[in-house]
Image (tube, rainbow, N blue to C red):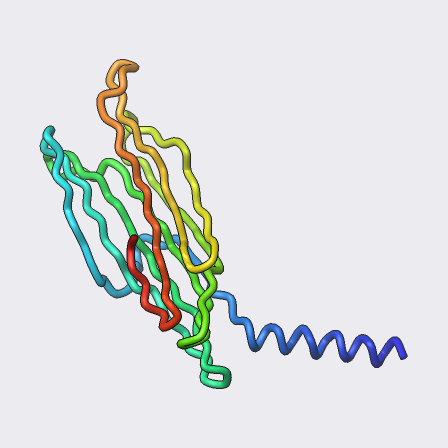
Length: 167
């Protein structure tokens, strides 16, 4: 009887592994995937912030008409002399049952500071329903005095067809 229950348990685990593929989310700055949108925001001091959205992957499971979708949005702040000051990246993963339902499955952030004058705080990465959220506050200090603060607040929404938009 114990052997029979063990076999049933093992088969159930295998079935779940096949039906519910989890996306592997990696915060890899070298391979962001296919660029789908970008924007640049300029500041009074000549620095600027680039924001880019990428499709990382869409893995389709033809057996049950489902797929996993991975998207990334990045923010990179540059000085007036084009020196990279800091970088922030949010990668979100969704499980999509085409035309029927969608469920956010992961939210991963990555960040890097390239200047000692910048610091970060309030890092967050969450997901719920069909939304992936990530954010941080980046602060520049000169002689201990805050001279600039930039808040990053990204929300990515996936619909039941696997289309991801920034809201």
